[in-house]
Image (cartoon, rainbow, N blue to C red; front, side, top):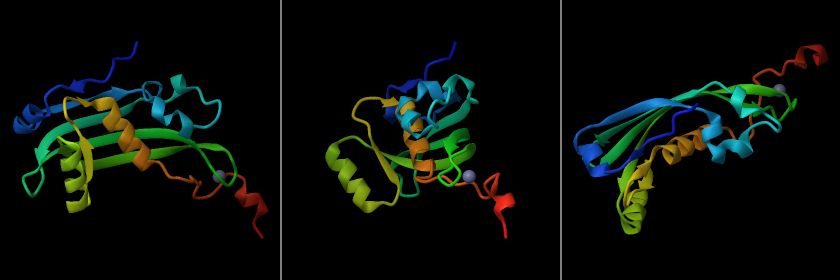
Length: 152
Ligand SMILES: [Zn+2]
């Protein structure tokens, strides 16, 4: 049985108190990643990913989250079409916007990611976003397993 990902009900409180949440998540719980996984891959066999979220202020005092996601995600090499594991080790700071207007303003004023949070924050969405940003558009082995035999 897999535990579901929490929601951050009150992002003001989460940031102001410097709260922290962490856990593990299965790829089976992250449906937006399904399109990126190798065809026919059984998500039940994937290793769990670890995640954490901490409420912080960025260097300008803006409300933000520090999100860490680590683990291995199976991808298909676009050269040899074999599956391999893509290592994820991502730590990022995401600004919190309360309104669409604030989101646009923060987006223009900063290189950081901005997440819209008018009510609560869904950790699943945050973790999925980070993973989608971590995965390469066209993953390739450094050296494909069969490449040695075709060397000249
Ligand atoms: Zn390859």
